[in-house]
Image 1 (tube, rainbow, N blue to C red):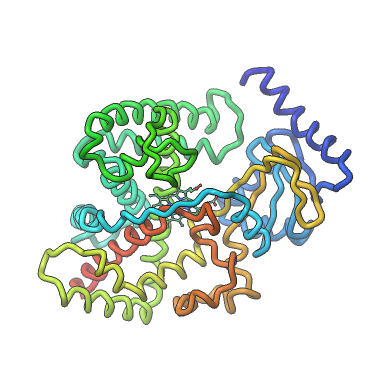
Image 2 (cartoon, rainbow, N blue to C red):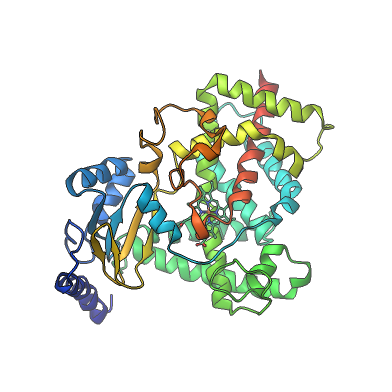
Length: 410
Ligand code: HEM
């Protein structure tokens, strides 16, 4: 690591701490810990041992619903609860929704069926998560970026991509043997790969898919305004592609994995799902692909998916950055600090969801009855997940295929 950068990273949190203390408002309780490393190792260890919620609960018991710490090299304020979610999700102004997903239902069905035939049918035992990661990566590559199957390009990209994600969730120490360093090297490879891909896509822009067009033509800080039409720089496009890949890959894979697990563990729920899919299958001829209208009929299946998302959200939480000093809940969050929010803690709050550990899809019968900012599986407010419809489509397709496989097998 560059020595000047190291000195900066050591002194910066101390400077912020002193600056914050001089202010008339007080900083949240807690400590920043050792510079750079702070509490990252503790959180990462807790995440790897599946005890991250416990770790955060202990923090909440000790400091209350707002506290300061250092995560991934940056001074951070952790906030928790419905009000905290509202604060995080409404403190931004851009908007988006991807409505073109319906154009891709048939193509997605093809990808899913092919995947099922190759990896599921006839198998006595399979490990679901890696397969679902492969499926969601294949779906995104094929549908959104037009990287077709049968080329080793997808395999290379997925390996580098996983290493890059590993680097994001690591302590930012850039030495040759660290995860962070491997992540940085992988990120250069991913970027070079995408540069080549973009050059290719520019050539075939006219026949490109809607997202390829949006990614290349829209010069905005987010993907939200697809009508602007001004061409983006290569770097902006690469950033956007990486954002979509990062946001849409593991999330969908984890949701589908838990959905399958929950269906296998809840026979009465599976029976209702199966019935729903049998009804749809009856209206179709053999081999006919699913349509957008078919997905609309999978109402109960989607409630099961939402309940899986409530109990086992693929996204643990996220970060925002304070662009100026912000007062929140009687404390100051200094400019430049991170704000750390989490999802599972609100989802498992028994003052919001009765018997939160019970798997009960009927909670979503009347979604309007769920208080705002309490179910935040896809985020909320202006930056709510733009991949919502895509993720829904991705989750419902394998369910239909799995119902087919299990139904045929019994
Ligand atoms: C089950 C699957 C998914 C879940 C649970 C999920 C969840 C979320 C959540 C909670 C956020 C908000 C994060 C924040 O506010 O900081 C988000 C943002 C985002 N998601 Fe998803 N997502 C899923 C699938 C997808 C897919 C398939 C795509 C793309 C095809 C996608 C693209 C995005 C993008 C680009 C953002 C950033 C939006 C912005 O910052 O304005 N997501 N997602």
